[in-house]
Length: 415
Ligand code: ASP
Ligand code: MG
Image (cartoon, rainbow, N blue to C red; front, side):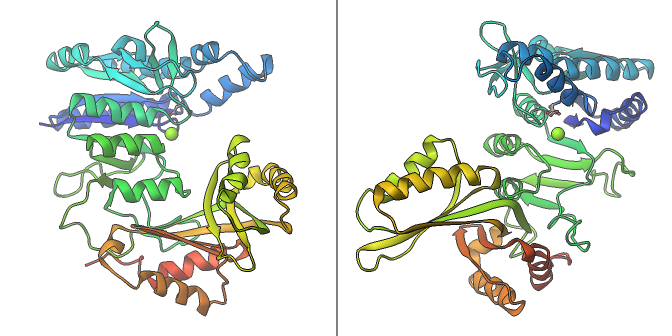
């Protein structure tokens, strides 16, 4: 018998009919003998509706009241799902974040979980009840309702799984797992059976948005095996009794030894270059300091080798921040006596991700060769232990991802 935390996202509980389907699914797990703690999101579209309501009153609504409002979406779902379970003869009990006592800090709208009281849940589980918890919400020391940031129900589920030392945390969503890349770009993309926490973080932060990043960080920190799977797919169990989807877990020796696990990409990139700045200590800081002060996040940074006492400096930002960063950079350029500022907001980033890179050389050169053969020019390169990223013209995104996917044989299962 296992203890499983199951999280159902907004689409999975988007209608009463779907809530009834979720109840059926939970019933099957119960019949299988498992203890179940369920975490639900608000019904799809509901949180957005609440956000719009708030903003129709005030562009920047009071943060405390905003959380009081946004947390109501999940409260509807826990009640409806518990009713659907009770109707099926399954004793269930709903809990808001406050009732569980999910203690958070007081950072409204982006609170962090500090502690979870497990006593009530344990007692209920011992009594054979299914526990249905509202995702995305908690309570601070002063008893104020807090929310965890959009997509925060994933984090609630992982945190509960960690606190209860659950055997697995299952995230049901509208995709059936994590793919080698976006199947809309590469139809041959393959669902991964397993991926490590580290790889998943790279895939997620690079744009393969399946899970809230914070949830993956949390799972990695507390070693909670995390499975992403579709709430619409049957069968529920594979032949061997295990459920399907993609398991996100720690690195094991016998893990499928692929060199590359996936290709992530990001369309929201822009780059800025400041040419001919004096090559002396403190220059990087005088350029990036003001950018940081204007709350623009910087991703890749490249500084060229200096020549004639000057150097060039290039970095990438989110496309939405391009104009603002350019304004700041123009001011900096005037102060530093730089020659010129140039920019390009029609670029994208493509990244190969895989823990297999640690033990295999030659992946970067194969990547560059593959792109060169397609006539794709690389603008910038950055690497880490398990990732190689290149910046290219946005018109090459699809071609680049598709060619790399086939060059590294990602459509085939590694042997
Ligand atoms: N309902 C919240 C949102 O839409 C939290 C979640 O679904 O995870 O962001
Ligand atoms: Mg979600």
